[in-house]
Image 1 (tube, rainbow, N blue to C red):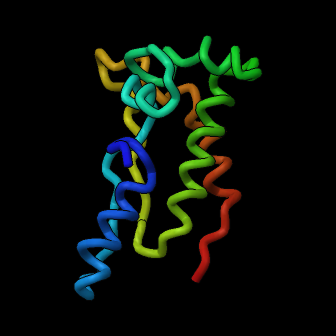
Image 2 (cartoon, rainbow, N blue to C red):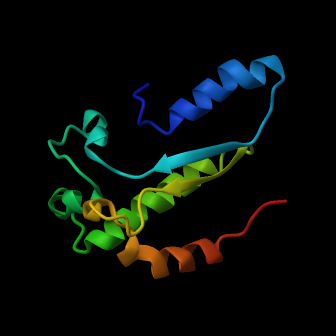
Length: 121
């Protein structure tokens, strides 16, 4: 599996922690889209998610923000398969020098999405 794949934390957790009865919560401390995903998709881009707008337009998205939000929703659904994952931190919000990664434009609609989700007991 490629290091950027959402299966990697699951594979490592299952192989090294569950197999030895060490079940601890897992926090994914950085998630998002950058040029590293091109190893999976075959694109030739660098930088943050905002640089993928043209790529997503070719895939049929008209709204770049919505395209990235859909990617985050998909990853949220992937994380929900594993009871030990407590969440992830999206890179980045309003950090100088990282504008092409900035999720500021998505904040309100992403919060609405998160509030719409139910948490299983």
